[in-house]
Length: 176
Length: 195
Image (tube, rainbow over all chains, first blue to last red; front, side, top):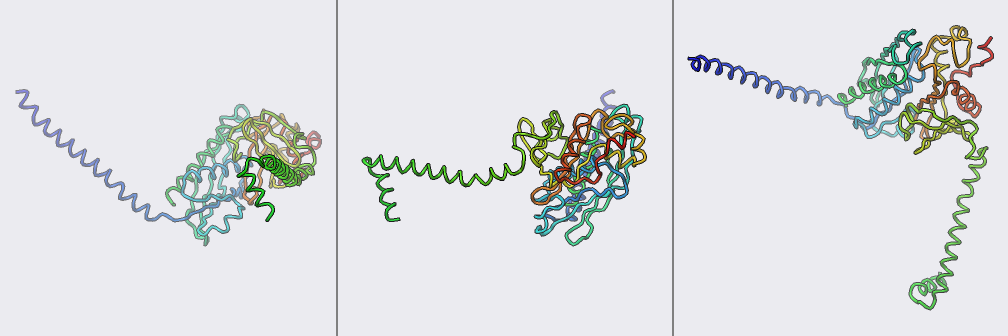
């Protein structure tokens, strides 16, 4: 008796399992199709020039500006999307035929807790929002969006600027 | 041309003329040595005209951490920061990097950053140079931060951050500005802040 009642249950279970597997496979197969549509929109450029961060009216210390700039250069080079990553002012960039330019402008800089900073350099995180603007050789906008980075003080500070640069590198990976 | 060719052939082919061949080789080596000395002499002269001898830094600080922007020098490398002749040098046990003072676009210390953020009025209340009374701190109070922005030979912008022992960044800035480096924030006058 027990064997007779168990068979329909196991049969329905196998049907449900098969459906679930089919749904999973279908969703996995569906993903590359959407990815292909993204790659079709990618912009072609062989070189990029990175301009120093424009602090605008936002008072940002030199340490932050430099750390962000140097991390940006490193992370963009790591993407391997460009043959040349030119620094601002590099004379060789003028001869690059399809040069794109990356500019970053400070939007906001929120200081962390002063009390915490007095006690320790680790706590007292800072929020930094930068506008990332990439234009082509003709000046047309390719990317224009705000990217947030959480900046902490010495040690953690650079890790946060690294994170910001990684976010920009991801944008570049998707765009180019 | 006509004389040299037969002698060369003799040197190569005949054993009886070994003495002549040796003499030629010695003369050749001598000429090469004299030529090399003449070629290198202008370079040495240039090096000496820079001022002090290259081995004698006018300002040096050991145990300085290069946080970022060292190009060939790895981030977080610890080494000696010095001013040799008219250039700022950072040397570790493995590598060395140098920047000419004239190519420095901006040089600042963490004191300058505090001035930028807190404003001059706020800085006036701090009263103590390199030390207490700091309201705003971007880095640890026990260290000084020296940031150097410069251009390379092709005009490319670079930025480097050094972390030094407390009170050591200002002398570097002072000397580099005297050597031709630019600074957007002028040197803080300790006597003025003590008043």
